[in-house]
Structures are given as C-alpha cells and as structure tokens.
Length: 522
Image 1 (spheres, rainbow, N blue to C red):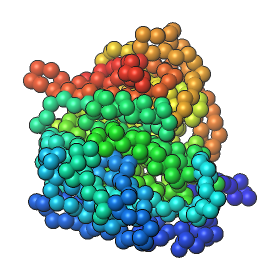
Image 2 (image 1 turned 90 degrees about the horizontal axis):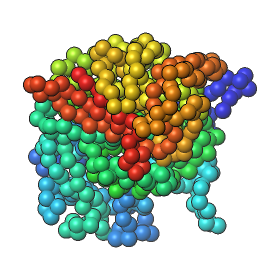
Image 3 (image 1 turned 135 degrees about the vertical axis):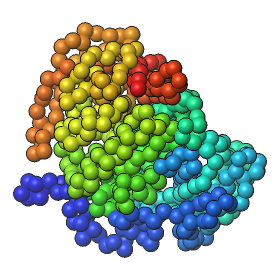
Image 4 (image 1 turned 30 degrees about the vertical axis):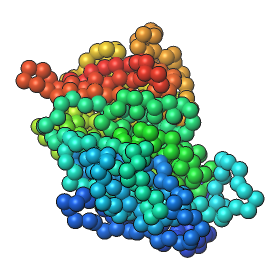
C-alpha cells in the first residue's frame, strides 16, 4: 500500500488507517490480543505457585463441551529448556475451564491445572477464504488459542500430558496422551540433534517434511518463518490476501510432531498481519509463546540455549529493504540487543557453538527473494566479530549453503563432507527454505552431494538497497545448491578430554536422502 506521494506506508501507518476505518470494538473483543504485549498466564507444577490465569468464559450454550475437541497441539521451550516448556493448542469453540494435566507417567497425570486463553477475532470482510463459505455466513472468524506455561520442571525427564476442558477430560485414555522431554542441565548431557527449515505452508510436501521431523525425533525444531501462508501475499499490507483459518490447518498438520517436539519459531514476512496490531504481530502473540526475552514486548526476538549451543532468533523484517513495511520498527533496539547477546554468549566458556536463525536470507544467489542487504550491513559484521558458527535462513524456497564467509568474502572452499573451523575460517550460511511452501529456482545449476557440478565461477546475488532499487553482484561463495524440498538436521557432540566439540550439519530431502553435509569444529 502506498500514499499518493509514492512512499510506501509502514505497517504501523497501515494499521492506524485500518483501525480508523473499522470500529475497534468490532475488531477486538475482550481478550483479543490487540497491539500490546500479552500478559502471559502460567501453569506451574504442584511444587510452585500458580501464576495469573486468564480463564475463558462460556459465551453461549450452543456447543456442549463434550462435543468440542482440542486440536493443533504444539510445544515450545522457554529460555531454559531444562525447566521450561509451553504447551499450546486450539479449541474450535468457546469452552469452560480449559486445563492441562501433566505427570511423569501416562497413567498418573495429576490435577487439572488452569491455562491461559487468547482469543483472536478476524473480520470475514477483509479475508479471502480459500474454501467455500455457507450462504448464511458469520461476519467474524474467532479462534481460541490456549497456552500452558510450565516451569520448575525436572531436567532430562520425560513428561506426559493431556489437554481438555469442562465436558472433555482425556485422562486415563492413552490415545489422548502426548509426551516431551526436558533438556539435560547444562554440562550434564551427551550429544543431541535438532532440525530446521523455513517456508512451510500447508499441503502434502509440508506434511512430508513434518513427518521427517517426527521420524528423526530431534530435541527441538527451528522454524525460520513464513509458517502457514495464511497471509499469502506477505507484503504486510491491509490489502494482502488472507485467510485466518489456514492457521487451523497448519497447526493440525504439524501436531503429530509439534505436540511432542518443541518448535521454536522466527517471524517471516508472511507473519506480518497488519489487521491485529501496529507491529503486525498480534496474531503471532495469540498463537505462539516463545521466550521473547530481548526486551519487554519483543516478539520473535529471543535467545536461549540447549546444552553447549547458544541460539538466537531475530526478526528480519526489522532490517528488510525488500519488504520494508516493518523496516527499523525496533528503532535500533534489536541491533543493540544482538550485539550484547553475542558478546555474552561468546564470553561463556560453557557455550561452544552459536547458531542464529531468522527468515530473510543474509546470503543467497536465488533470485526470487534475493539476499538481504540490510542484514549484510547491520548483522554480518557482528557475526564476524563474535565468530557465529552457523546462520540459518528461509525466505528463498530452496537449499543453499555458502563457503565460510568473513567480511562478505569466502575464506576457503567447503565441499560437502568437509570440516570448518569458524574461529579461523568464518561463518557458514545456510538457506533452508524448502519446508513445503513451493519451490524456487537458481540462475545457475544445482550442485549437491553426489551430483556436484563445476562450481569455480561466480553466481549472481540480487539485493535491494534501502531505496528499494535492485542490483546484482557477482559472488563466489555459493558452494551447494539444491532445488527441492528438504530440511536441515544437526547433530551436536560435546567436547571430551581428547576431542573437540563438533556440530555436523546435513540437509535431507523428504525421504531422508542427504544432499549436503559439513562439520563445524570448535
């Protein structure tokens, strides 16, 4: 959306115009997320006191609680995954007294604990539903998201849980039980694995990559943004094509894996939904509970650690010249926080590896979305300074992996199967946007494990400058390119008295075939 002067409106300006046209009372019912940060209620085990709870009142008796089933369960870690887990889910209608039961045995789940409810109301008038609507259709879509924040859990322990509400209690029915495992305390565990991809959407390819995650059974999964494509346009405009109920399908599709494996999400441009909040993230705050510990009110910007790996999630919309509706919306806060967080992590002797993940591609030769010059200018120097090991991105719907890079230039060739030492060689950048949401193309030929092609020349990298003008730069760091659906699988092995810490990174297609592999060594 642009003003008559041609200047593109920021997301906040669009939200202000939009809410001026529509009554806030119609848009946001009591309990909807709105523009402010959510006050997150809590569910604690019996050893701790219960935090503030926001109960859902039963608006009508149209639907009996016994006829309503929870769906779309998905879990996430807190900043300390050895003690903190959040369980989230949906119900299709208002229910009374929603709860979670949790315990260390599937047949002994303890008392029903109250949970927080976040109600998100969307006007049907500004949506374009992908499925047929009834002749007499409602004016709004109301989605009920429930969240149970669990704290003071026991490290390295398997927990079992069920979720329910008045009229539906699955306790004692093993078909309703899900399980998760907390992380070991720092320094107490052995090796572990995690997976990552971006740009998933809904459909059979997205279902296949989710099935691969379930089969690999990682300790956690990273999602680098563009999750559901409910906002199919992704421009952060109030004119975007949007269907709120695509999110229902997304969570339902991923439940077999996400109900038991924590999914840690970053924000993509398709998560900018300007109808709900001035920053576009009211919908994100309703659906997800991430650590969000960068500052009070940060969304999708957080740090955490799992054993000897420090992890940082960033919001690439803040530095994105290509889709600038949220450009610089943090007013420099994210950059300052990133520098302080990297400095603290690299000074921590118990952290071997630093992994940064966000949506936009810092380096990529795929022309569809190009590479992000804002990230190259603002973030890459910090990644160099604090020797970040691996940066994971989505945005381009392909797999691409660079040689190690420092100051924008490759330091050496890193063929599949080789080992890189970031302290000496620099940072390796991986684009893993083949989660299921369609496939893009490279201007050059594919070259990947077992199908290597001559790759000693240059490739074109497209970037947009701050004024929105595109330019192409020739680069020589594009080492592996694969056109297809895939995910990244990482195996971490801690150091011993005689061996260094290692992190092996593989790219796997939907059927588990490896198209790339390299090892990071500290």
